[in-house]
Amino acid sequence: MSQPAARKDDPFTHTTLVGDLIGMGGSLLGGMGIGWLLTEGALLAAAAVLEVGTAGLATPLVLAIGVGVAATMQASGLNDKIDEAAKGLGNAISPPQEKGHIKSGSPDVFINGEHAARAADGADMDTVECQDHPGPQMIAQGSDSVYINDLPAARVDDKTTCDGTIS
Image 1 (cartoon, rainbow, N blue to C red):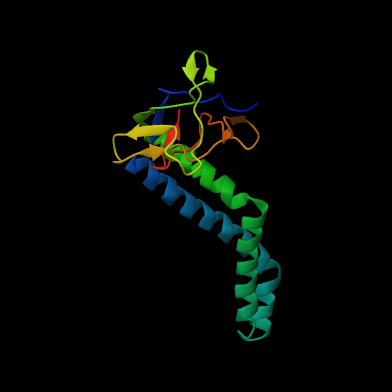
Image 2 (image 1 turned 90 degrees about the horizontal axis):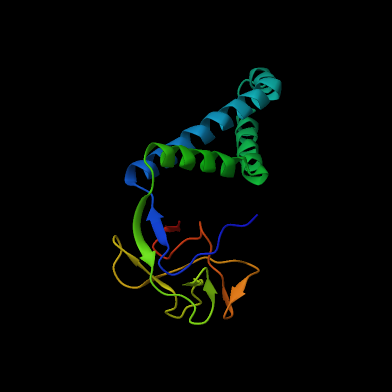
């Protein structure tokens, strides 16, 4: 099921610095750890014999195995899952903070009595007011299949141009 629709006056949050650092560090360490385990498994299966048997001439092959593991992790979506888990941990330890509200919406489409919020198309529509970022900020993401006044409908968890998350 998709997320609820965003409306005028709905809040949005920003991650905290501590949450970002934990998320980045966790993602880096998690990716390195899992990559190391997978690479070691592949190396123990084949490369160790090659390294000893060729007196080190197989080093490029050993490096290629590491690159192959990294590419496989990226292609399989494993890196994305590690990033998601690390960001979740960061947000659990240091929850995102409310930093503003959606300030405008559709003039003629209402959701539960509030103006429906839409993603910007380059025009200054459906702005958000952020405590951390000056100037007009807008809703950056919207639905791929639901449109309001020919603009993508915004939903909870969509991003703003200041990298806030609609909540």
